[in-house]
Structures are given as C-alpha cells and as structure tokens.
Image (cartoon, rainbow, N blue to C red; front, side, top):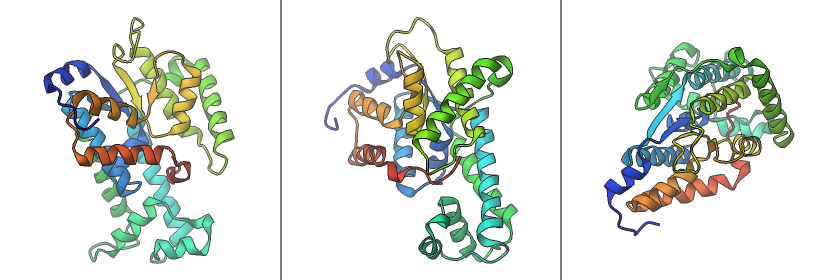
Length: 274
C-alpha cells in the first residue's frame, strides 16, 4: 500500500471527474471541532483528494447545519453549563457527572476563555471565532446551492426522513437524533440521486459520492439504495487513493490506520449532537 511506485498522471486520470460532497461531520473535523486526531486524518484525506484531482464540495444544507449546530451548542454552554459564571475545567465537569460530560465545543470555549483578550460572557465573539474556523475549513471547497427536496418531492422526502430517523434512534439509543439533522441527510441523498447518471455501472464510472463519518447514515443508505453506494466513509476512498497513487508517506499510512481505528470503535463517536 505504501511502497508502490505509480505514475501520478495515471492516478489523476483514474479519479478525473470524481466529485465528493462532504457531510457536516467531515467539515467540523476539518475545522478542528471534534478531536485533534480526527482533524489530522481528515486533512490527510482532503490533501490526497486534491493530489489526484478529486473535486471536494459542500451543499447549502450542510452550511446551514454547521451554523445551526454552532448556535445550539453555544446556547447550551451559556444556559446549561456556565449559567453566567466563568467556565471550569472540562475534566472537573466530566468527573462530577457523566450527564454533563462536555463535548469539543465546551473544551474549545474553555481554552478560548484562557486568552486574555477573550471574555467568558462574550458569546458573540466566541461564535465569530467558531464561524471563522468553519469558513476557513470550507474556503478550499466548492459551494453547491442545492434545492430543498421537501418542497419538490415531499412524499418521498418525508418517507425517507422517517425511515432514517427510526433507523438511527433504534441503533443509537444514548443520543437523540434530531429531525433537522435527518432532513439535512435526506436532502443530500436526494440531491446526489438527482445528479447521478443512470448508466454508471460501478464505483469508477460513478463520480458523485457523499462522504460522511456517520456510520449509521452510511449503513442506512446501503440498505435503502442498492448498487453503487451513495454515502461512503472517508477511509474507503483514502485506501483506494493510496493504493492507486502509490505515493503514501508514513504520515499518510498513520492517518489511514487511525481512520480504521476510529471506524471500529463506536464508543468514540462524535459527542457533537447534530
């Protein structure tokens, strides 16, 4: 996997035309919101996609969800954790009760407050800080203004929303699945379905894929849509890129191994409740 000597021009010809739509969780990781090691592996994935000419993009649904989650998390920190008081160490909070185990947003907020120019009560500035991180992360990706399929195909949209929400709720009982997040997922799936060519017969002939770190979303999609996958995890394409391009460094291999480790440890799923 890491010693093959392949021609870069051949790699680019193989991946030419590929277009990956990045899910919300991928962009949060790219922005450094959801553990440093996950940011590293996503950056490796993005770099390798760029090397072989794969177009990376994100939809208007994802951008709306990114800002919605930021606002919700800040409101939770403001009202339910700090309640007008200076923040305390996240490790202390976690030791008091598992019900209040802070996610990455609180950890980032706590560290942000340590900077002398930042005030713990200035949540508007903290929001700007997070939004700037998101804007920086998506700046190198293509923005797609996609239609709302709840308006153009309401019956099918509602059917798929109910199906995915039930699927996630039954299999991830420890965390609430929001209708808003499921609607984002379904809008993305239906958008890909609308732009994918019918004549593609295999993974290489199909160019459009939704890349997500949500294991349940991926497995649900595979159960709903037969044939070529619609939603895939990043490690699938990273492994293919490394194998075809043959230009993997030791850091690339480390990132790939970390991908696989994160993939098989469900206890390490995102603490961010999208």
